[in-house]
Length: 501
Length: 122
Image (cartoon, rainbow over all chains, first blue to last red; front, side, top):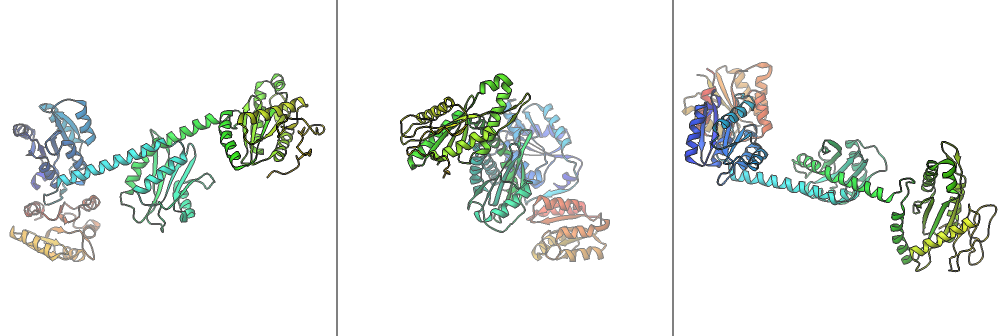
């Protein structure tokens, strides 16, 4: 055996179950200058190749007991034969056989009986392999359990495809947060880690899973490894699925590709109990994670486009209505006050007529920015349509609503919007309504709308509070010269100066 | 014909290998670890091939191989690794240090004999 390894003749192993075909092949290949060892048994062929790797191995694609595909995959995976070319032969010139042979890592697929094709494939395969350095390997006494090895190869392939399918299935989660939560739940079952981090650049998102007791250390390590600057933008999942222990091995980092582009990186700190193939597994996971991340980003973006008014950057009417249905329900159930401000820009038509529609748009954009800046976090400003804006004031009664409304009115009055032709100054008429028990959303908005209309009729640039007890709204206490044209509170007092809860 | 040096910390393996080679007419000397093996090579010019284990106390086979080859010395002395290890990284390291072959125990007697016969320097 050794002599042929070191000799100038090329050794070839031929696996062919058919005696006659094997004899013919042996003769033909010998005539081509190969030293041929032939066997009808694929397991024996594999053993011969693993014990002393030949220059090339030729096998049938479909054989009893062990297929050529299995044999080829096994030989690819074993260090001794990883570089040894394998040529697979099949009965038919069909694409599926070629596909399987190629996927198994065969150097070529040749249709049986086409001898010239086989000889060419052999020469190419032998010429393409690494130069023979005279080093020989004999990796066992000649008794590998081939079936065990093939079975374990199949287990590995199956495991990898299951992992890949699990990660791909995460594409159903519509947001980065939910995707990362589900992903961390999944990955912590497969890999033991102290922390897991995912970072994407477009959009810029950063998520981290760690043990509740390990927050600071995990975040610092993850930011350093992934090069993410310290800012507030972090999705954090903290639970006992991440291990709490002293740092073990150095963190593993993998790029997350999507097509030809790079979405970001994934990193994890292996725990002491992590398997040695963690890096391999993580790169498999990273390859599959690109799709779900992209889908989540697209869904977030389309969600944003569907709910945000592009001009003002505020919620659009549909999103506002959806939010209000939930909010009204909540407030009525828990007996919390809810107020609504409806704003209409005064003489908006003349802004458009005198300065152009672009100027009108700029006025609305400025209003959006103002409301976004002005309102408390639990308040919900939205564009109602045209030059109308609406603000839901959660946990706010009529008096608190009047304070908030007056503050907005004054802020708009003080607002100067520079445009190309002129600096715009304008005012708003504001209607305020506070939710009644059992009131429907439509009726609630209608009262705010009528209060706003009353403010218009009352001279604009003022706030009118809708009548709360059902007697119709009244303009009352007209403060000079512009200000709260408030409806009368039941006790006749103007409560606009009370602070909101 | 030159001598075969068998380096292995297991007396059983040493004896088994020595016997196999002696029966085929080779003169065999033994060493129990890398340090002893390197000393034998330095002091005995009649050694024509080395059969070398990997896992040994004090100095392992790969360290010994690298030490023996240091500064280009003993470049032509053939070495065959005979070990229970089959890790690709170890095999690569042995190749780099100029080993001629890698045999995993248990080995076939005729394989070892034919390899030694082919490689031994005269």
